Image (cartoon, rainbow, N blue to C red; front, top):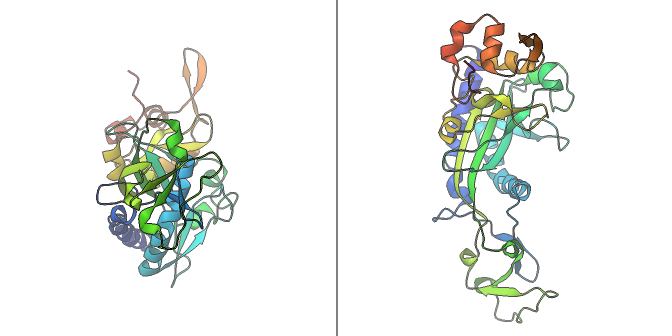
Length: 302
């Protein structure tokens, strides 16, 4: 086992043990999110919108103290991405050997149904292809010992009316004896509840997992025409790292996505870009590897 493999194995084992504890860190005994909203100095609780961007950002803030504690215990320090759109979200640097670095992206998404969820896994553009450059990435891609995702999957709670996102609550258990009765805020009504648990959460039923990025990648882009790698969609496959390249190996993941849409085949006399793993393996003369293609690949054309 190489030093890289040794450090990767150790980091992955610690990361997987850590994510097992996260569910009870963010959810109640009934599975609801422990975050109920924002509080002001008058003890008014403003509920959170179920908008995925808002939920994702608050989840990141909620989880960050636990991630910091995990990193310190595991023997790493953390560097945050210097700019909003840089990769990765978090860089773990070994305290005793700063040449050991791990990229970790926090990925949050809601269930589309009981078995399906998905997200993007970062760009297959500049920094992915030019791996000794540091454009839009904290350190050059090659400096990282491994690239990981910490995935958070949840269920969105559907409310009967759109105004549920904007409710204001006062909670009896937060009141002090000398508190005055709350005044209405403008025309908006304040609802009084007995305790914080009485306020409905906007998300529930969390599942956490950690996996190397290449193991949960699909062979399809994750969002329209942007240069983003898409994940596989099946939740069990995500949690168990059973993506398109999981058996083929990381080298095939790298080669496929570096060349995505850049190599072509001829169909009915027309040049067509190769955008699925089957055509790519055929282009490389490796149809013998078809049986090693993992789950979540584009449907193979007969």
